[in-house]
Structures are given as structure tokens and as C-alpha cells.
Image 1 (cartoon, rainbow, N blue to C red):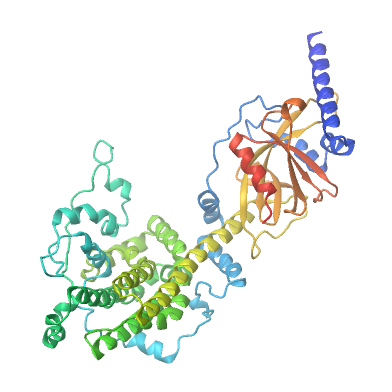
Image 2 (tube, rainbow, N blue to C red):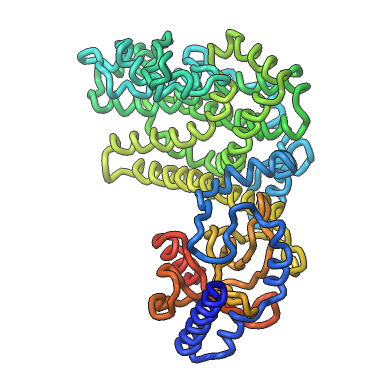
Length: 561
């Protein structure tokens, strides 16, 4: 008797809910669409025996694990790397990236470098420019410590920055030179005390190499300029010479990266040709560009020790910087992933790299610290020009000659950022495509130019089954919303079984619901697909996990990219 009573009560609730829906929508077709079992729902029901443990298919009252999924750049990448490999993912990403980009990361070993090096460049690579200053400046990693000298005490009446207090350097070392620690030990490990708590990093020996200043140059002293120039004029000359000195330091580090690491046959033997290219990208060409840039700067200084400007030289080299730095910085995400992968999985690589890094040429600096220098440098050049601009007298032609290269450098940095973001978006698509199973639904190519992921996540979907023993229930679904596509799936393990998909935003509309009036959960909302792969209009009542999640979905589904 009790069972019959419960059965009648369930049917009564179901009938009441259906009546509410019909009254609310005033459209029996939409309600029938909710009640009727679509082919994908039948597939879902028939496979219920293989559903994930703990998955709720009857009501919202059952607890379900809705712990936040790992983000695409970690969860999907970890699965993809295991199943497909870094090299294949990168090749696929590069293919799509280059479809709609005038500048793509370079594939030198495949002969796809769009800009072939001219004979003069090859000659520069084999017979480098002999700089006057490269040997008197430290490696660029150490030179970055000197960049804080504006914050340090100076000798009175002098621009000498040699008085650097060890206490101050110890304080800024972890911020300015994190590369001094071994690449095989994580920062978290080095900052933990024996009891497991975070502590200050242990003191490290600091190398401070006094850098040559403009006023210390022999030709400047002989010229007698120091007796006739004002303090402000000398400071401006120091700022312009800092561009030269820092470039010499940067080139010195690049030569270590190329001649010591890139040219190492032992290291190359531990990697495949593609891995070797991912690791070093176009760093040889970046080094050659730095040599040409420094040569022009030194020629300008040789013409007159009192430099009138340097902005015109920077502007002249900006087109080449753009063609080299954007691909290099775009590729850095793969450099980092490859180094981490090889250090963990390739003992031969780890042993060879440690041996190379222990060489006196590296001065205890890691390979990674050399590889990140190009991005640090292109941003630093912009800051140096901005500093020169602040010290330049207004209403002069020099102002214009500084503003133009600053703008050009800003565009390079911006395009570097755009390149990285574009690569990440395409990588998401590549990784996700491997996890989608279209089953009986017509498949669509996911990885296409201009497509990117907008929003994703789990939701509950209301289903009103038509059997006598049925009652209103909710099934778990997973939505992937792209700027031009909506995919509805059921998540099983690490895969997504596609149930439907449609064009977005043309075929998708969303609507708030009066949940209490309809007897629905308070976080319910409606999504209407005017056209989908099921062949007829589809209406879904979805239930979000949280209020903020509901608002995010309604906003995303209502947007017009």
C-alpha cells in the first residue's frame, strides 16, 4: 500500500510540474520536447550501467562530487602529453597558428623559416662582431642586479654605482635573480625549513661586477667634456650609454646560450631534432640581431662620445626585432614544458645539462635563465628609452625620435603577448579535440582558425521521462561554449561523450525562469537551441551548481561575439 501511495505521489508531482511548464511556456511543443526521449537521451539511458559511480540520475537531492576541474592548461595538457606527446601537439598548434598569422614560431629544421637568413647574417653567426664592451660587462643575469642601482646609495657628486650593500643585494636576489638556484630544485623546496614551514632563502654569494659608466670611458675623460657638461647632461649620456652597456651584457649571455648550450653536441644527442628546436627556437637569429644592433650603437658612440640620440637606431632595428622576438616569446611556453619534461624523464639530458651548467662560462647560471633573456630584454629596452625620454628636453626633435621607437617596442611586446595567448587558445582546442567522442553524433572539426573556448563546465539537465514509474529527474551534462559553437556532452572519466552541438550564437538563446512557480530548483534557467544535430528545435532546462555559475553561464550564452 505504501509503495502504491508513493507511486501516486510521484506521478502527481510530475503531472503538476508538466502543467506548470505548459502554463508557463504556452507552447506544448517545447514541453513535449522536454518530456520526449531524444535519441541521445536513449543512448544515455541504455548506457546507464556504465555511468560513473556516484553520478546522480534521479534528483537534485543526491550529493555529487562537483569539485572544480583542473584548468585546460593543466588537466587537458597532462592527458594530452601522455597520449600524444609535446612535439605532436606543438606541430598541430603551429599548423593552425600559421594559418592566420604573418609571424609564426620558426621551424628551422623543417625548412619552413619564412625569412631565410641572408649571407651577411650567416657570416655574422660564424664571425661575430667584436664589441669593445662585451668583456667588461657581466652576464645579463647579473647585470639585472645593477638595474636597481637607482634605488641604492651613490657616491656624492658621482654616478658610480659600485657601493652596493650586501644586505640590500641579499634582499633583492630572490626577486631579481631566481635563476641562481638549481633548476632541479623547486622554489618551494628551497624556501622550506626542516620543520616544513616556509622560511627565508639561505644566503647566496653575490657577484657584483662594477659596470663601466659613460663618464669612466677613456675617450670621455680625454675629451674634457666632464668639465663643461651639467649634471643633467651627464646623466642623460649615462642613460644612453646604459643602452649600449646592457646590450653588450645581453649579447654576452646570448653567446653563452648559443655557443655553449645550443652548439653542444652532447646535449643535442639527448634530444630529438624537434625537441632541440623547441628548446632553442630561433635564438641564434636573436643573437645575430643583437650583434648588429650593438654594432650600430657602438658606431654611433665612436662618431662622437657626446651622443645626440639613440632612438633612431632602435627604430631602425624594430622591424627585425618584431620578426624574431614575437616567434621566440610565443615558443617560450613550449620551452618551459620541454625542460620540465626532460628533467623528469630524461636522465641523459639531466646529466649533460648539469655538466654544461657547471662550466665556468655559465657562472652558476642555469640554461633556463639564458633562455628567458630575450623577453626580458625587449621589455627592458623599452624602459631604457622611456627613461631617456624623461630626461630629454621637451619641444625638441629628439622627443619624436624617441616616441616612435617606444611605440614600436610597445607593439612588439603586445604582439608577443597576443602570440602567447593565441598559442594557448589553439593548444586548448588541440587537447580538447582528443578528449571528445562524437559517438553517433555528426562530428565537427574543433581545431580551426579564429575559434577559441569561451566557457566550460558541468550542469544539471532536467529530464521528464514518460514511463509510469518515472519522475522529474536531472542528469549531469557538460557544456563547452566556443565563440562560434556549443557542444553538449556527458562526461565519463576523462572523456566527453557528445550528445548534441549547434552554432553559436545564431542558434542559441537563453532565458531566466520563475523557478519557484514552476517547482524547479532555484538555480534553473532555460536554453533554447533553434537548430541542432538532433534535427529539430531543442529546449533544455539547466541547473547551475552555484548562483555565480548560473550568472556566468547566462552571460556567456547571451553574449554576441
